[in-house]
Amino acid sequence: MSADSASRIAIVGGGPAGLMAAEVLARAGLRVDLYDAMPSVGRKFLLAGVGGMNITHAEPFADFLGRYREARAALQPMLEAFAPDALRQWIHALGIDTFVGSSGRVFPTDMKAAPLLRAWLKRLREAGVQIHTRHRWLGWDDQGALRIAGADGEVHPAPAATLLALGGGSWARLGSDGAWVPLLEARGVAVARLQPANCGFEVSGWSEHLRGKFAGAPLKTVALALPGCTPRRGEFVLTASGIEGSLVYALSAEIREAINRSGNARVELDLLPDRSAAQIAQALARPRGSQSMAKHLHRQLRLDGVKAALLRELTDAATFGDPQALAAAIKALPITLLRPRPLDEAISSAGGVRFAELDENLMLRRLPGVFCAGEMLDWEAPTGGYLLTACLASGRAAAEGMLRWLAGR
Picture 1 (spheres, helix red, strand yellow):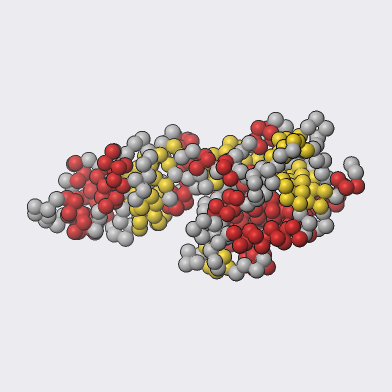
Picture 2 (cartoon, one colour):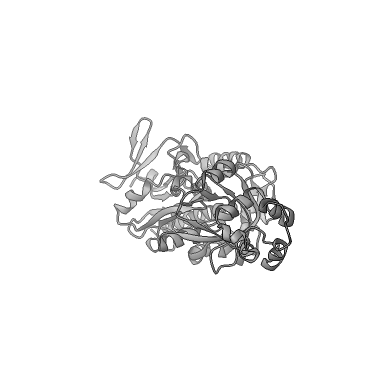
């Protein structure tokens, strides 16, 4: 290995994890070449900022860690080393102010991702990071050098170490296409199947009336739960094929796993979470005279629009004639979900490189000198800043692990 290559690092992937690793490594004095297949870096990062750039979350740290479910133990050291407060300080050092919203979510003051990314890229370039766009990683050649396809053909760098930060499998048009999976599996690396996370779900089929009149309508101030679980309050949207939106995303991991186990998942929708079943039954039992049931529901419960239509869709005439049964349906309206929407539509993906394949430095045990970070690792999290925080924290952790490994050689 030449003296030049001994000091060069290759990072494949220009998302938050790769960019954070580049910053740490360049600050340590290493020469960093960052390769990305897209025309510009941070494309999914910018998309996440549409409608408000949610950076992280300000809830108590123990609650924050719990959002990562089964991956909590693996991610905890990284998140402790780069916790939400440290992340906010890092953003402030870029000249971007932040604030905590009423939900505990943290945003840049201007709610935009682009100024943050511009300031970050400026700092990286000033630190000497070389960014190569339109360069797609194709694996390794027979001599172990990287195969990277650029506009002028393949290049074969042989860096001292390589970080793969290639994202998951959602939003292929932004670069996260999961094409790296067979390349690592061919080297014996175990990869958990990429699956949709933070996604919508499909039903067997809504009626033409419901689909035609209410597809796209929001269901606000409702609660949703899997049977036997504590309901979560929020809102979601009725789609032509099923349901999606923030409340559905919050339960998407549990719903998906129930479908994987049983072939479908039943969720229970509480249309009026601020009223008890007894209060609803009492209101429904009041005489309605010549009023239609639709008008009775509106007059007594303010239940109309998409909520009333969905209630009618998922109950029968006998239920509508029995105040107690109808009250029970309003409090726990069953919706059977058959499958998640396609992976490429999901906000993020579950699955990825199994943590057992990585050492304490996030280096692949089977491929010394090759490190992994970001969404391509086997973890998932809900929306709310958790995804971005863990990507940044794992990129930082992988870079620091790389520095330790290089120092020990």
